[in-house]
Length: 137
Picture 1 (spheres, rainbow, N blue to C red):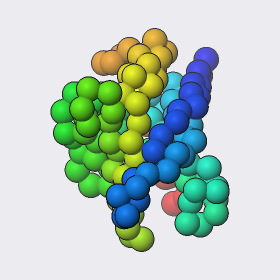
Picture 2: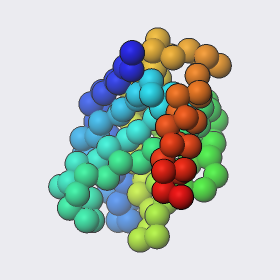
Picture 3: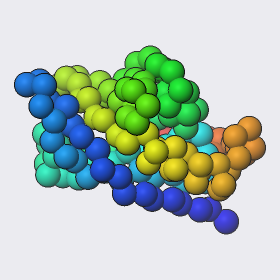
């Protein structure tokens, strides 16, 4: 049985003017995709006016809560004892978003209760992706 978690979180978008603005986000995790976590931004805070969802490795989130981590499109690092910064890169630029570390830790622990680290069964995920790939051939 697939389990999906969704947790609202308050974040702060750091702007170029070195100001910040509150942003409601949704943290998501699905046992059907056990290695990934998802951060969803509502349409009113995106450039395109549509919900924007960023997906990245659950392990990246765990590592970034302890020490600077990430290559490519997502970077995460602790910012003092109480905050964590997530940096999202895309063609149009980048977004710096600051979270309460406790909220991210709570979410991560909830994902571990669904699928423990190291217990991810990739068989169904691999089968689904192969079906999509081979179905298009």
